[in-house]
Amino acid sequence: MSEVLESTKTAPLTITQSAIDQLWSIRNEQNVPEEYGLRVGVKGGGCSGFSYILGFDTQKESDQQFEIHGMKVLMDKSHGIYLIGMEVDWVDGLNNRGFSFNNPNAKSTCGCGTSFSA
Image 1 (cartoon, rainbow, N blue to C red):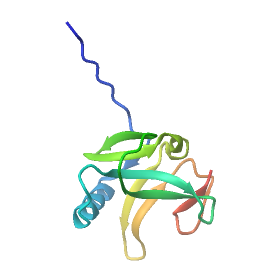
Image 2 (image 1 turned 90 degrees about the vertical axis):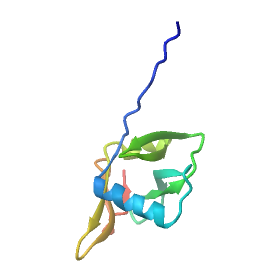
Image 3 (image 1 turned 180 degrees about the vertical axis):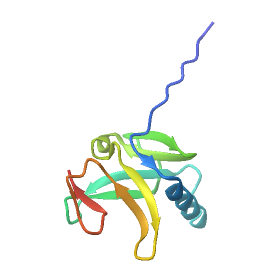
């Protein structure tokens, strides 16, 4: 008899339900292909040293894949050190509208909230 083992990876970040709802809306409006996942990551640049990546993309060999609220999330393995514990939220207020990144690893952030130093 063979035994089937299933491994589950815990996502290193969280995405609020309001952000997931907005992402599904964007995905549907832009007709993003089904095989694409939500890429979350960082890149060099921005006023504080790093800026966040948030967009739909195909899976790459260096990616980890997670499922958060039914959405496939992709993250380059090397980005985990910068994103562990981060929360992605959707803000829809009078003075501010867009995705926000609450990152406990950020030593400082810029005024726009989309770049940080680690």
